[in-house]
Image (cartoon, rainbow, N blue to C red; front, side, top):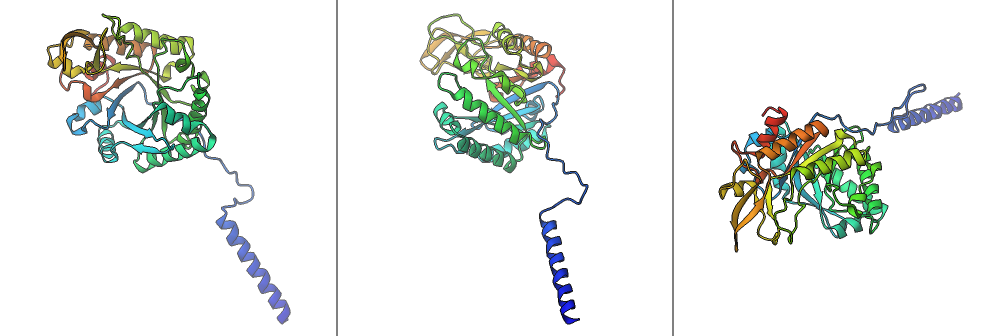
Length: 351
């Protein structure tokens, strides 16, 4: 009997150990179906009004209404390092901007920039890409952000970075979209000129990225005078190329707008001015050019977008695409001449 009781005790002990082990491993009960965590984009939220805000802008100088005019704020920038790491410009300011965005019902994204060589080295192999994605996702969670905006300028077919960029974005998409938690966007060329940078944005990426911020500006010349860097024709060309020629879903196309001006036929160094600075020198919010002075350059012609052109572009985006993006909020005015105000008034966005 003692031997029998001992055997019983041993059996009971083994049963308890097995049951405990099963609980620790979360083994489902017989007949239970385990549903894997879904990988899918978060829900879209209508017409996107994206405003970049660089780390060197004091958010206290941007009134709350300018945050309400946007439903997305891109904090610029975090950067890839030469060793493949991640550096956030002024993390304390990121927190302030994020809080201000959320208080005004805007989503907050972390925009990623850096030297092409550093992007290339980081993305060259799977280990580098995986490590960088982990760093990005840790930052998104740490600062309670809504997603990531990739601003690699530019991957290209000429050195193979089109392949590694595609791999990086697909892996980042899987991480952002796990549980439909975070958004992934990308800043891309306007597509006007054929070449490696344009062709590096492969159509196979369209399902993986939630929207594309099309930089339809900076088409300038230092040798040809009287050339606008961001006229209405460039906006039409950009949307037509990406949507109609390349097949980007219109719901993912966001048209970029400049809140600054550039001269033509002369150097761009020291001659580029903000929209608010141009108006401060007598430029008209109803015009697309003005005569200004900057540094040693006096009475030269500068080209920008006034409210009428911004309204035309906003209507084009509303008709043909699904959003606008402004570089950048701190360059706009904060009165009735505001370009963001012109956008919102055109598309009927309350603020």
